[in-house]
Length: 241
View (cartoon, rainbow, N blue to C red):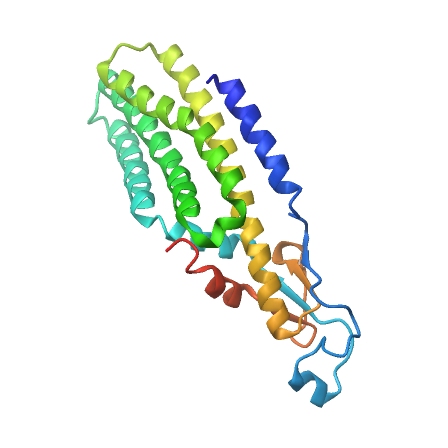
């Protein structure tokens, strides 16, 4: 599959996921003012009205990446190699030709590993019963992502053979990086939807009427809003195990 076709498919799936309710306001699980809208502690204190909670989606999303820490460690190690190479070149201990050749290899390997991170997350989602409601979309996405994985692997192999000019390499690398960027966005949308579902469950348990993304909260007094990030993280912690 061509790069352009792959990006179109990924973008289309992103729209499907977005239509599934990825909105700034996560959930209004109960009607304001209903008899059961506040927990017992709030009822005793006479507290009434809208109860608001918020979730840091970025913090919660990191839970899913933690599930593939082994692959992320490879990415961190490869990024460190790139940094070390730059340092050595700056110190004059690596010659220009050697520096350019090794830099091409490392950059190709780095993007390949980064793609593997999100491909692995998708594999874990597909294998998880917690994502059963999204199996069809996830399987379709994983099939369409495989050519991107293969292209990244092929790029690494070709660079190591030394039969690629810098201009050709830069073009191929930019194409693979563009595919990686789209893949990252879509997988983020998938787990944001799961975070949303977890927020609904946690909010219902705590009598919260409205849940917002923390990025949209500039200030929230402790009596007005509840930080649901940690209980939501606890809820989703087992999703990819």
